[in-house]
Image (cartoon, rainbow, N blue to C red; front, side, top):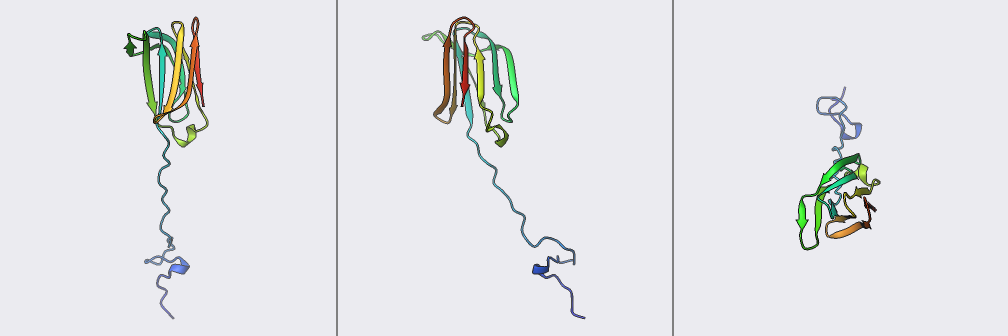
Length: 130
C-alpha cells in the first residue's frame, strides 16, 4: 500500500491531521482619522457636554470646566481627542451647553474642520454634527 504522507491538495498535515494548507489571512487594522473636539465659552465652568467616545458610546459630563483662557478674546476653551473605531463611523454628534452666553464647538480631523457651530444667548447650546 502506498504511503499516505501529507498532500497539500488533500489538506493533510505533516502528522497526518487535516490542518489547513492555506496560510491564515491577516488584515491590517483599519485606520480612522483622529478627531479633536474643541469647545469654547465665555465662562470657565459650563452646563454640560455630550459626545460619543471612540467606541460609539454616549458620554455626558456636567459642570464642564474649560482649561485654557484667551484673555484677548475673553473666552475659555478645552479639547478632547479621540480615534474612532469602525463602530463609531455612524455616530457623529457633540452637544455643548454653555454656562454663560456663548457656546462654540469645532470638530477637526487632522487640519480639516468637519463640523462647527456657534450659539449666543442664555445657556447657549452649540451642536456639531457630521
